[in-house]
Length: 264
Image (cartoon, rainbow, N blue to C red; front, side, top):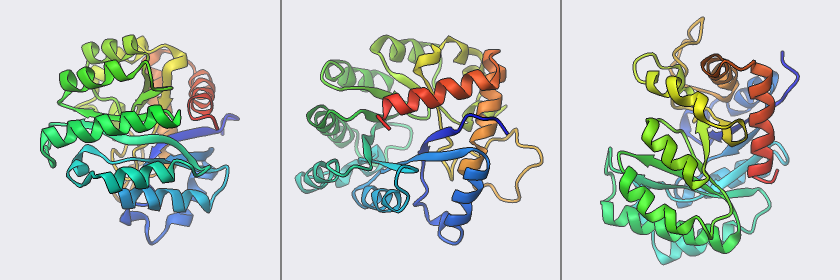
């Protein structure tokens, strides 16, 4: 086991798939050296749930509060007020997951853009960093984010799956980049593997996005497709291999970056 403790900056531990064994999942993560996690809030209730779980594990778990673009239709003045109130809690370390998702369009695009703008305003008002989601909406995403960046403390492109152009644009804007098990996917992650070395070490963080994106490189393969935070080690291993850096270097950098970014 490596001496550096890792930080999973994006875990959906309140997901129902963890209801039967959440404590065991947390223990397995800890045994694998993943002792701190940022729990993702992606709806009003999901943000409450993430905060509630984080409160049970002080200094081990933290939460983001926000509304994912899939749920943008639910965004209202009342939801905005709730999120604003939740940001006052000590365990809350970022606004989001927010952004645009034109791949699925579960909410109309104009409502997605409105919810995204309002959450960027909330991040600016509170001084919290922003936890970003973007899929198939790069131009609109940049158009909204760019003017807001001068007022936002810090921003991370959560679960980055884009190509060289998107990466260059995000780095130019000052974003930190979150890498998941997407990089372990031989079908879809090849492009990411080729460009991940372009990310400066001080702008890199790692995450599982559990229960999604189980690393396909795991050997032996788990019995289920559910991802969990203990597999952050595999993301680290593949990332280190892709960048030509020792695992210890990537581990130290991503942990220090997460501590600084989220003011842990």
